[in-house]
Amino acid sequence: MDKVTRLASEKGVVIFSKSSCCLCYAVNILFQELGVHPMVYEIDQDPEGKEMEKALMRMGCNAPVPAVFISGQLVGSTNEVMSLHLSGNLIPLLKPYQPFS
Image (cartoon, rainbow, N blue to C red):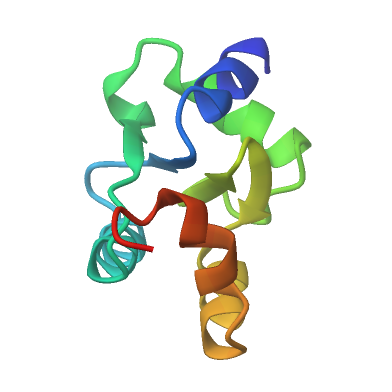
């Protein structure tokens, strides 16, 4: 869990992903369209990926990927991100990380 916590805090917006996950890709594209370029960690490319996946689940992510962190805090997976976006609450969280805000 220490590695996940450390990586999640390294940049303002972090996505833990798997290279074959279409939902991970969709969330990443959403952020890019909103002017944010998240740090993406492909856990299936990491030798400690299985442990990272378990740590994300223990942290409260209902699905291990995508796991989105903003300002070092777990936002959640696809459902939580999309709910925030549709309710208008995602953009205020991303404001500090948009280059022209």
